Image (cartoon, rainbow, N blue to C red):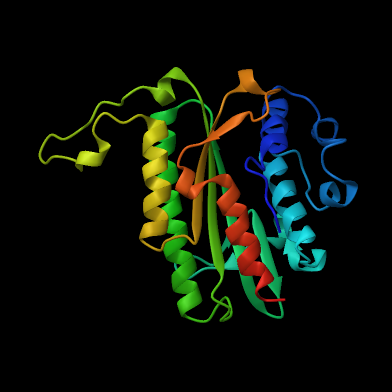
Length: 237
């Protein structure tokens, strides 16, 4: 299945329109088909991303009855906690096939990125330990992490380092929060914490552009994220 270079253009428009207070249904109308919209409840800012993922999975032949995005249906058991609510779960024949976590960041870049980094690592550790202990089946699941960061002078400017005792890794020197998100996604995959991790940068001033966002790391692009997700899920059919 062919995935366009920037598959989340409409999802990014949906994101900014939701933040601007427009109705989710109005933002989605004419962009996502009715079946996809009905699979996602509520007016979350990242629902456009969910709709895009669902559309690509459906187009690849994945049955809608195996794709879960509604909040009450996306809980999975954990190891260090009773359960964790994910954004998207593909579940079939008592096997967890794929799980995706979506995050966004607009403003408060320092605290938010550090907190999200800790969450991402903790979620991955809990997920894979639960998998090791047989709580999620034995299908070798896909675990994905997708993060949108606002394009803003504060997210694009070099960040001061804190190293009162020991020096930080050289790769973090003269980096912005955008750069650090790219480093995070690359390392999450390199260290096998996630099957795929992708960071994108988007500005509300580009809402009507096409494309209206940039992939922070082309080797971990939004396109490759979808391709890897669809490939893994399709292997089970």
